[in-house]
Image (tube, rainbow, N blue to C red; front, side, top):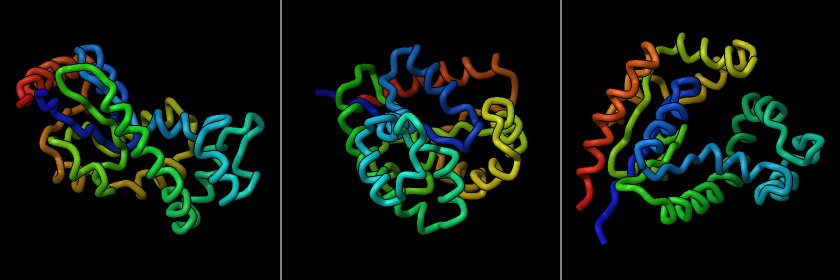
Length: 201
């Protein structure tokens, strides 16, 4: 069986990862989004919820039984050790679910969307190429404010906890510039799609 290339798609919050991933999926790529898996794991009756509640207590669940992301955000950004405790629960589960999903998807190549790909070592060694969706920090902030309503201080805390733009670009094999108009994206994505389709061996 031919090896289907595995592309690690990453970028900071508000960079446009989901938009780019959806465009690749529309072209036929097999896409797995680790953020979506994390949401499923922490939804009501999610697989991760018993361990999260045991570790952090009932205050981190909302009225539906899902993880209250705003409460957890406050906890992990005020206490680095709390963040490590949460990651110790979630990351192995996300890794296992992602591996199963990647084996099941169709397409000439596969894309795994990993927001913290550069920050962690798990995915960097597994992917064939790293694709970074890039834009300036100011534009990231503007987009997140528009879509989420988070306060500027919260957004900056999230950005400060992520790799810098320079660190991310230093790890990139490929870059999509998402700092301009939406109409500038399809050409970049089509060109990379053609490249990735040729990576099978």
